[in-house]
Each structure stands twice: as structure tokens, then as C-alpha cells.
Length: 173
Image (cartoon, one colour):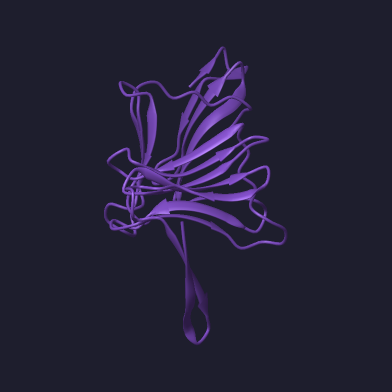
């Protein structure tokens, strides 16, 4: 279908492609492999599901109402030319995996690791202390002069010294 025979609008080939044009430029074409979209700006409205036809429930789904991109279990978000950085959930565990050259840097003015219940486990303060927690209670922190071990009760503060051969001794405070 064309306008006055000069400008393509729509073409359909029997047992073949369907082509859509805008201002005589090809924008969408069906192929034996799927759909090809041409142009520099592709815009989807509403929910979008990227369906992995080969593996059931290994999809990526954009939920417009929640404004979130959901990667199903075992579907990895990868970064870098060689997919050096992966973030994914296995269904049982969550992973951040860096396998390229160099280091994995996590930058923050204050970094806090917590349990799924919201209990503190580790705090890294910019230009300050590193704090370790046990059952949401601070038990150890770095200070300017070294390390400070917290006293949980009047009689429970001690440091256990270990070697590869086992316990070498205790320091009580």
C-alpha cells in the first residue's frame, strides 16, 4: 500500500514479511526469526515482557504500575563487554559476581549490611569506624588507636586468639 505510488506506507508479502513505513522509511518488519524494529528510538508503553521461548519462566518483565524491571530466577543482569559482572537470584540465593580483571568497588559514604530482618551486621563509616555486630549488638569496632571490643555483659568480654593449630589463648577484659 502506498500513497499515490510514491511513498510506501505498508507492504505485505504472501508467506513472507509485513513491513510498516513512516515517511517512506522502514520502521517495523516481520521476519522468519521475529520482528525487526528500525530507528534510534523504540518506545514501549505499559507492561513489557521479554519472553525466553526456550526456557520457561526465564524472562525479564517491566511492570509499569510498579515502575520496576523484574528478572526472573536464574536470569542474570550482566555488565561489561565480557559479562564480567553478574547480578542474579537463583531462586534460593542472591549473587553479585565479578570475574573480570580488577576489583569490585562498592562506594558509599556509609555502608551498612543488614540481615533480611533489618538487624545490623556490618557498618563501614566514611573516614571512621568499621563496626561488627552479633545478633544486632555491636561487639567490635575500629577506633583511631586500634580495635575496641564491646562488653555485652559485665563478665562476657574476651578475645579468643587462634592459630592454625587451634585456640592459642584468651584476653579477658
